[in-house]
Amino acid sequence: MITSTPARITENRTLLTGIRWQTYQDLLLDLAENPSKRLTYDQGLLEIMTPLPEHEASKRLLGRLVESTTEELGLEIYSLGSTTWRREDLQKGLEPDECYYITQEAQVRGKTTFDLNTDPAPDLAIEIDLTSSSLNRLSIYAALGVREIWRYDGQDLKIYILVEGEYQQQEQSSVLPILSRSDVLVFLNKRSTLGENALIREFRQWLHQQD
Image 1 (cartoon, rainbow, N blue to C red):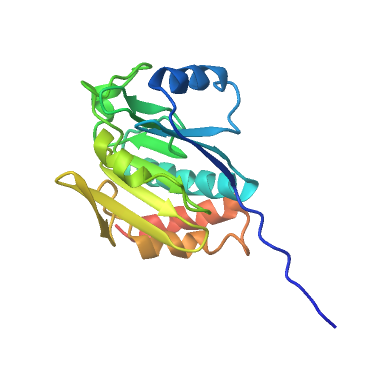
Image 2 (cartoon, rainbow, N blue to C red; image 1 turned 30 degrees about the vertical axis):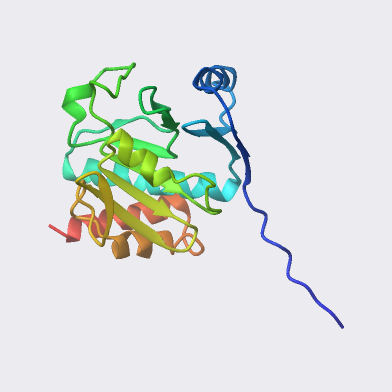
């Protein structure tokens, strides 16, 4: 008897070439009310991605871990979710899954419009990468100046720190030094046995023990 394992449903990614910057801007406006589409632009290349529930669940849990950590440490934070970050002079733009100002929160507090030619980039961006992007999103983040990236592929978490214009993989967060890659993974791996709120309560208790 032949048995088969159902194929894992993957995120739908479409790559378009020869796309003008203005076309990218127009699409951002057209899709502003449609959060089910994510756009990444890099010098004429445009990738359109449709996230799956697994993608959204992972990004929110990682986001809650970040937010809980800042609350427990008494840090201010500016959460900007999947805001589009772009620079026309570089012909690059993307939307993180979650992003935060933490160390630079005071500099941007209350701002609702940003210009990365003059404003600082977010301190931390979260990337859920269940299927690899056709574009090098890390190079786009580096060009935009985002200090730290957390990239989760559904099984492993990697932390990238921007050093002299390039990302280096590190075990420890630089924006939230109390957290290491292995610490965060411990709690991500509890999702199959704990409800989300119970997991966050346990995570907060763990944070208290680190003092």
